[in-house]
Image 1 (cartoon, rainbow, N blue to C red):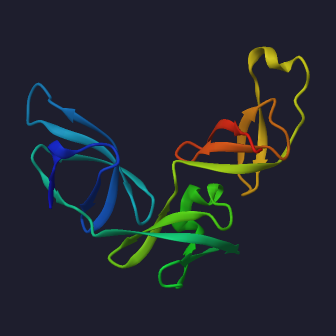
Image 2 (cartoon, rainbow, N blue to C red):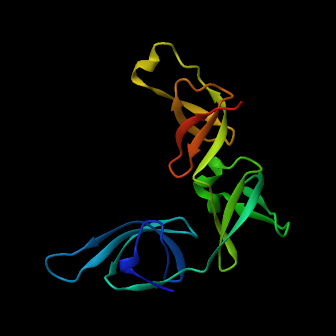
Length: 189
């Protein structure tokens, strides 16, 4: 299916020069003189690099041959991350570079989606929110809560995020994987 510049929206995946990209940001520009164009910021799904490119209005692109497969994250070994396809029981491994920021929000045995381009794994798509246990943080100091301050907390995956002062070690917090920010404390009964 051909995708035109008029179809552009954030998160749309297009193929540019034989490589899959996702549109991070775009703006339709109509200069006083000359032809209108679309200024975009696109991120490569293979390398992760972000490019700023201008496209002519009406230019068309192919939809990349992407496939998603739900898998279970098993374990990390050095710079390799191992996953299990629960349909075929085939084990897949991705590098730290292919995962990018996703490694910070993947506890062992969690379910994620691996993105394939032309049959090769290129990255991981996480759920929008994950629940992770706080393994270390400094205690909140009484009287510091008037301004609604925050403090750093280390999660079970090794990621460090800012959390409110009332969060303690052992608490489970909900984290937005798109921004890496604390959302709320999760009550475990």
